[in-house]
Length: 374
Image (cartoon, rainbow, N blue to C red):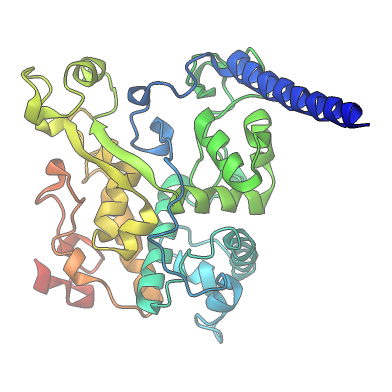
């Protein structure tokens, strides 16, 4: 009897080992042997450009306990008016969104936030409003809240396209398997295979979204959850500017000067092409000392802060984000955090110094006594 039991245990162990080996082999086939082996393969700027989260550190985050009810929170905004809630807050971004549509999104965010109860739920109402305003303004820059493109399950413009939109780090294009495309999906445009893998592991404990990324095509609550995951999860940010046609030295600088310009003898690897490296999240930035300027850097610093880019702070990306952030808080009758917007910075961004000031925030320029900050 003991021999039978022992044989059963051994058989079970062999079965588990075989399953693990099969999983490893499957990942080898899909993504190659160096799936995440080299951290320098992942220049972690905007999520279109290879973010890879390094875990979800809850130790830093304080919560009010139960996740926030966004429906109740939004219903308290201008409750007697014809327009209220999210629709009222994002008027400066998309004025055609109705209260009913905004209420639907609030309900979906409420459901998604159950996986991240710390989101907009610090117990400090002023900070929580700033976080939601930042979240909405970044989404506005990514998607314009455009329902004609499937929002909140927005697909990246121009996709699917096998040559351009596979986003597979091993270099396999989606013609290997047209179902395995990892282009931007959702309110914050979750991109790249490793982001789908890490999000799937965080949410489900398995690879179901890695193996079937199209689940993010039409499950609205899941799409919102992907945005909250990206917002809350800590990533390693910074490094050399993303490769662009105007600055072809990314790989060379990464190879010769992995620690940055201070220890680099190659003159082309200058400080203007380097952003400080560190672990952070948009959530931590907005509720901490960095504010909206740091959120912008985390989300889009590799473009807005790099001289090789055609974006620049004054070409819409930074300025619009800040304008929308301020307009949302204004619609909410909330205070603008002057200490972090005077002048409006992108934190740790040399290119943005003195490019934006409060006079550019809103029209007319002196709304909210903005002139005092000029």
